[in-house]
Image (cartoon, rainbow, N blue to C red; front, top):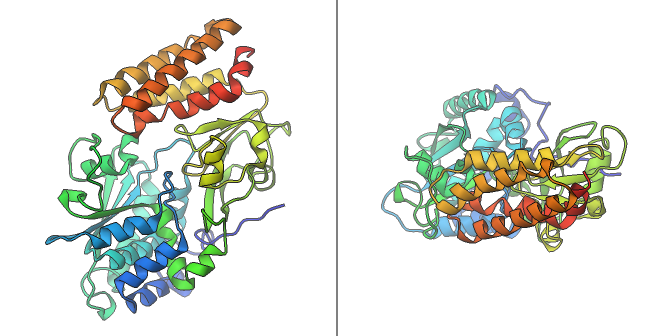
Amino acid sequence: MIAENRIILKNAGHIDPSGIDDYIACGGYSALGKAQGREPGDIVEEIAASGLRGRGGAGFPTGIKKKAAAGSVTKGTKYVVCNADEGEPGTFKDRMIMENDPHLLIEGMIIAALAIGSGKGFIYIRGEYYRSVELLHKAIDDARKRGMLGQNIQGSGFSFDLEIRLGAGSYLCGEELTLLESLEGKRGYPRIKPPFPAEKGLWGEPTLVNNVETLASLPSIISYGAAWYRSRGTEKTPGTKIFTVSGDVKKPGCYETDAGVRLGDIIDNLAGGTADGKPWRTVLLGGAAGTFVPPSYADATMCYDALREKGATLGSGAIIVVGSDRKLIPFIQSILRFFRHESCGKCVPCRIGTSYLHDRSMLLGKADAEGRKAIIDDMLNHSKQMAKSSLCPLGQSPVLPVESLHRHLRESIAKE
């Protein structure tokens, strides 16, 4: 049996998220006070030593990002941008943080700003998150009134302020450089890397872009130290991870545990097992841009490197459970329809490829067993070509579900 270990979500359900008083009473903004008494370089080193990895999906070391942004020289303004454009199907952890503990995110952003020397921050949030937007506006106003935001924060001589900008529903804008294009008021088209945001980001200035869960991890690291944080999770994925479990389970929801727990324990113990009590057929890890895994992966360790070694992905922590009686053909058709709809059309491989993959998937239900195998083979070949030639991660994503479907479920779908 496993239990949750709530660090980021420790206040969820226990404080009033519409005010600042409960958050302060629970020790909120004390980490900011500690950070203000330290040199920016020390803050960066503490975060780097913690081993915190970006919780947006890529798992990139957060300390490296902060060192790069802190080391970039500018005569203008450095920016901190929170990526709250949570568009990955099956993922709703950031919404949980913002709707239950908005000041935790704000405190994390101020600490990040101290670390890199930023004077301005933006929360780029998907427009459909009405409650999150409402609570964040209120939280920012309350933080300003208490001297946590604005000029000369708590008499420290450091100034930092925040604005909220709404996304318009584009999945592509969840990618950091495309997000910055949108934040500048342009169409959400991807930029070519390099340069990376830490060197040339928002309006050409050094910019730190982090996910909500990543930034919400900073206050506890500063409060308790890197060694404390590393005492949880695994060596290469320290700390806790929020998993969002949905699909054919008895108790769908958000669960925060130490990184490295077994997949089967999350499904069986935390989510209550499958809805019908039968063994699950497959699980899609990481959302639409994720990987299908078979029941033999129940013992899989839920951390970035261990899953990568098994040809799977942790991604943002989405776990979509497919029950034993669920048809897979409509499921994969839905995923490929999503990619087709969300392609921005800028590059040919993605614009044509996403439509082709969806069209081919629609033939699966009409084909016999051998025909289905041939269609899946063809889809795999085309998704690989897309991954090699597309400009941004969207065109590189369909190969993940298609390849894992081909590897683990090709024979099963042929008999469906």
